[in-house]
Length: 83
Image (cartoon, rainbow, N blue to C red):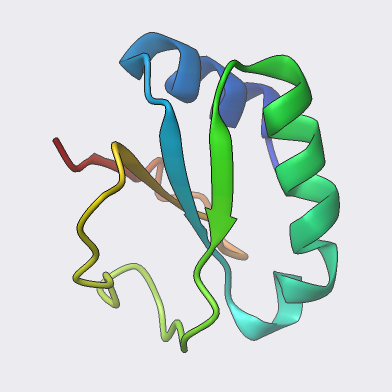
């Protein structure tokens, strides 16, 4: 089960305005639902990384975002502040 409240907490704590969300293929069907949830709880704009994701070590080299949140099937407690 995804801990969306933890994601909201991380976004609010970081004060991120532009958030990139990365999902493994199995969670991508829920991506827009998750984006809507986070955007409604936080004052931010979320984008979905549409490229591949092969695990926690597969971090996209993306500029222009304040925060990268990786979602996965296991809990590693990972988020990356980009700024």
